[in-house]
Length: 158
Image (spheres, rainbow, N blue to C red):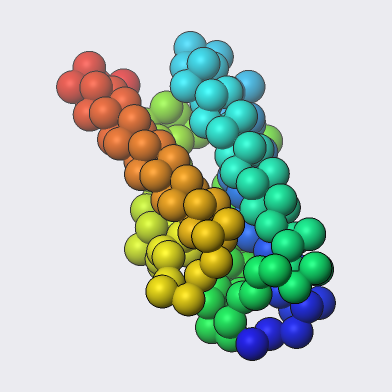
């Protein structure tokens, strides 16, 4: 089991990742005004996800929730965080076309699912299970919506 400080840092890192994804989608909302609603909705969701993760911190601090070692790969989260930050920086310099933004967003959402960031383990507490299941469901919903938008954009040659 990780010590309390390590667990809190890991949750903060996961929340920071969600916040950075929200920033990316907010940048897309500003850069792609014809699709602002899509990106704004996604950004708002990601900001909420960060709050959900942060809501776990008091449970770690009071000992009612524990994260076992290896539960989340901090290195994978940090790698993804760097990738997302790079896309935010790129967007401020040269906004992508809508289809490219969709592909990047799909990559980000897929990576979270493929790296099993939100998979539930047998020994997870009910509160952790609730948050992880919600995050996984929301990520799958985002992915499906982005895929539909991508298919429509490709169909219309955008």
